[in-house]
Image (cartoon, rainbow, N blue to C red; front, side, top):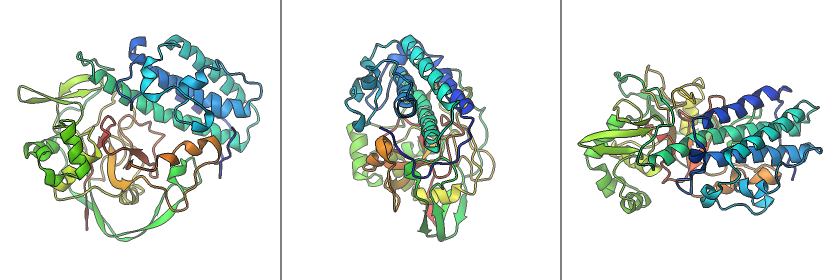
Length: 420
């Protein structure tokens, strides 16, 4: 069951601090939720918060403690079946669409499970560490940060399905403000380096670093706003088949889609469901919770296109990594400000026109974690940049997110591009 990192980064020997901080943030995100809230599963693509808390713990137990701590004994062997996600090499697992049926173990028992594994992990990282073990710990922490984002996106969808439209927390929204005019940043043609290097942690799908040839292009200096997207809707954008890819047209027609996810209209006024509950729609905020199909149709309506993931990374590499990323007091996209390439990180994951495919020379990790990314490289589109619920120290220029083109429950938005 052990695995080997191809090029394990030199990690700080003091793993205990980062590990404890990440694990504590997961519990902080779950704290506003009742036991009933934590058990709900609103659709097959989402998971209960309790399951996220247990699965991330199972990951450390199964992929770090069992291979590297010979003295460790599993908390409960039955959890191996309940909380495996998609690792076929590790055996049978509970069906994903039925995770909401796991009422036992209780939330309190999952808390005890987490404490048990945390104590063992802190004991492990206090001993002499091999580069292989340090890498496994780093993978576990990066994995938990992915699930911190999913905790928020999944509970938002669950609360949206509740007729009371409950609030997860009081989320800070910016006061209404004037927006910078949408302008364009031009990038020259040339050969650009793409992908993450080996001087820090990166997922296997970000590697190997390689060169791509790009023609001249322009990127919009900010994300598309709710007000701009409303104009597309008012121009019958959802009823004009010439704007849509064939699969996208079938998708919106089959599901009766006429607006982004979490939008609702009452008495001629649009409302937006947020993690803070139902709120009036603000035109200056970035539009989020649109599918790739909707993003592509909007770009075509504008006479523009979506960027490729390589254009996005070439542009983003020159920008500092920072922005409106996960802050438990905010949890909502902010309007753009300034005249730089605004919102390139944070606020909304940006759909690209690139299919999720392996880079030239891609090799999945060895062992069990070979299943982490590579086997999903079919039928998915790439998103870049992180969102308002992405942990700030988790995102980087080479980070590749991916979802099916119909996905709408993520904080996914639109940045326009054009040929220069």
